Length: 461
Image (cartoon, rainbow, N blue to C red; front, top):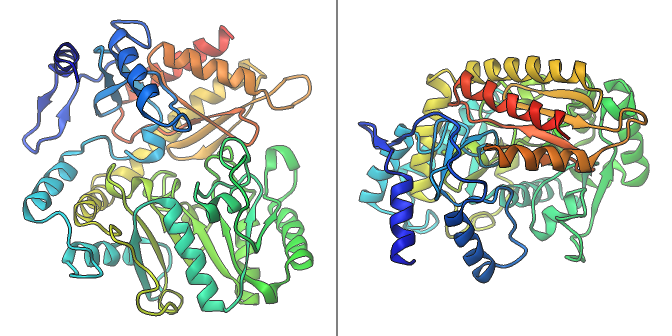
């Protein structure tokens, strides 16, 4: 890095002050001192294009140098409102003081032994915490991994081993990762699957409950899905059903009441493992600790990642002890799975989720988002639906005449928001949904200001 650029980066964060526990305390404001991208960010983006594979894209054309509360500061000193949380990862806020303190203590102690070589307390403590806080009062066990996709792959492995069966059913609009097996489970071709096949076999797809588009009750949608599963796969061949209780990349689709309970009941009756992919919905995001609780279901296995460790890479599979114990010794694991630093961060993050009012804060944020976006929808029929739970809310954009998805409008609104210093994320099979995933540390004032920018961008589009 050149000396002028190094100095520029330093000056961009010279407003950062340190809390007693070491986390950054940034001015909680939207501040644009250059256009987006500014010259320093552009220089770094040019370096990115020369050094990083083209397939690794980016949403916001900024180069982050600091983040905390509800803002991200870039290399030019711009302060952007963060309504994405790194795709639901920094749920408790970036560099939370408790996480910083825990990580610093663990780094000074040891950074790695490989849990499969020399076990340590942090891994066991995270497993115990997950066994305790995930839905259901049955005996549970956990295994730790590095990423959401890795957790999903291992959940499928475990289900196949336990049942002795091979087939797996995923759902329309679902997203489960970018590895070979998880690409097969994922419904959307571009950008996740196109050109990357052939994919893993014995993966089947069933229709999801999508009330805005199918108009079905939860019971009728479940009946339709189960009929297709029985006819095209057969329960005798089916190891697992995997579903996001509220879909993430698929468009924050909230299934109709009774859909998920009916699926769980059918799985129980037919010896099929029900896997809830809570990688995006987990850890207070939906106004409950896990989205499964929103629908009153208890999964056999649950996959978690993203918000689990305050920004450090960690993932888990947690489930019924008899299912989790089906694998032979050595069948589960990985060199970095349950890294001690990530485990220290996770224990701190779980403490924050449980004891610092995060669930209530998610509900408060959800109420603000729903009321404000609902008001915009009432005045602008291009928003077809506002949906979600807690701090996981989405707006689906449509052609008001036909109801068809409008991805062009969605992209234009998102681009305009980023240019005005508000980071929003798009999603949906049709690319016509903006999802709101603010960190729970965001202030009401910043949240309202961010929504004001979204409203202005929509009005100008």
